[in-house]
Length: 286
Image (tube, rainbow, N blue to C red):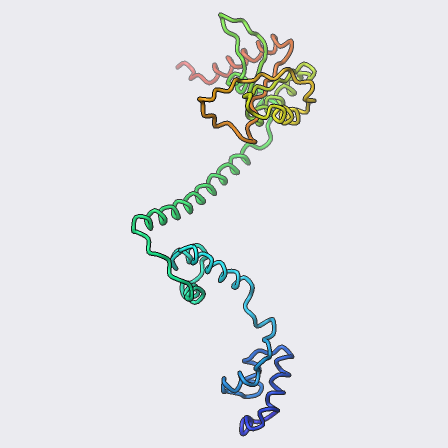
């Protein structure tokens, strides 16, 4: 190796050594230390035209961050806003976007609204995370249902959502209507617990005439494991053009009506069980 004394005089020989080291994958610092070149201008001339090795380049993540910062700057964001969005330092942002035009100053009211929206967006995410944790914990608490628990749940479910007998209109038959697939699933599991043969069930869709009737029928048939051609005639609700409906879109499938044939005795069991639940729920007499 050329010594420090007079090493710059034989420039071409020194350049050959520098180029060889560069092509071996050494960094500028390593080459500088190896050749004892303490002059950056000389080092630049020695390595002129030689690309740096891949391992010395900045990671792609940094390049992506820079590109995103420039994109946000062009959208009119301030350094503070970009920092909140990307989580990087303002000094880096300044370096990346300093050649771009400054955004127009917003009035204080608009800035306050943007700041409030940003805070609410964060707060919404925090609340949603807490909501999901609570739901997950509650789901774990349920555990495995016993037959007795499912029986009592089914009785309460039917008394809340099913058709009921009235003194002025005797209807001792089991008819259940609901739009929630979870409710339908639990109700069918309850009927299975009571050993009600599926052959005794009749299904029918109740839905607005402007909805996807056939799609809804197919959805419910798949849920209950039945052939849609065996469904009774669909009941269509007339559409009122003056009414603004919110139950629209792909997720709207109307209601499923479940009718249990020869169910007078089953209905009496449900009503009796419900009375038993109410009686047990009342405070005992002192």
